[in-house]
Length: 430
Image (cartoon, rainbow, N blue to C red):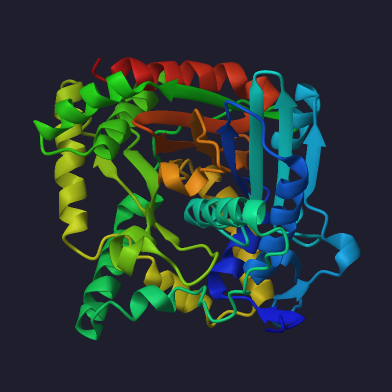
């Protein structure tokens, strides 16, 4: 099966490109795996090369054609996507840096080998895929790596038929629901809440580089306590973490009780609308929700959890995660230069008005079988995009019963993030 030299972009690719060019952050999504023993670096390098054909968009660079950006397949000499090192500082330099989607390939990896086991990092440009896409890449890569052990000449079939766009979700939403989606969007965006001054944990100004991640693990035993606490209140673990973020925002910013409590969160549409939670290919398939408490934080943490849970349950009963489909539909009508300009201007406009909320992305569970490279990782987590001041975004993911909080930012802001995460974790039940 011949892979075409040019692959059309879907709209969410182009939205992600506009975000990447907005100056608000470094839009890569990463997965880090701690392995108790060593991988075969030669077999891994071959598997990483083969996955560029198995999921063809990964073996491309993005071309910013003014009319319509597209994916261009890379020649063999530009496909190198594997680094092998014994130097932890070299590994961290790779982890804490960006990746150019206009250069490609869209997937890069680094293997740090040590006497006590290996650490593997997968880095993906956000234009090609979100956290769900990175999990799919890891699953495909590990399957290829494992098969190569018994079949050294194995070559996977390219996924040319798998659709990457939002239509794969919308085909499963009854057309009678479309007016409700538009109504939810209008109610959300025409209300004053989208333009009000909001509580914002802002990172301090300073040098944009170097950058680094703050990573905090919540052990499985405590996660069980959080889950039990939530169930008594009809709240999910995610509800409890959102409530802890609201409380931490109020504490760390010394909330004046005049600015409104609001947050941006993500919804993986695969989980809510697709069979087996699987997209047609590697792609972005997440949209936003906007938890809003206004001036009502609640009298204590338990009260905040109940407020968040009630609000989330209401949204889950009304086409959860789909309100912004209306905005995406509007974006289809815009030439890319206009979309690009909109992406560059909006964050600074909202930030200047004090109306740009903090973001919290729940990247979901990493299934253990999907990251088994013949060796089961002792730990695994996803890392969200690196964010530049004054903006702030954090991520959450799960693996083997534990949870990991993470955020990436310039090094000078690390102490601020450490303090914020300490507050978030401090509010959680133990």
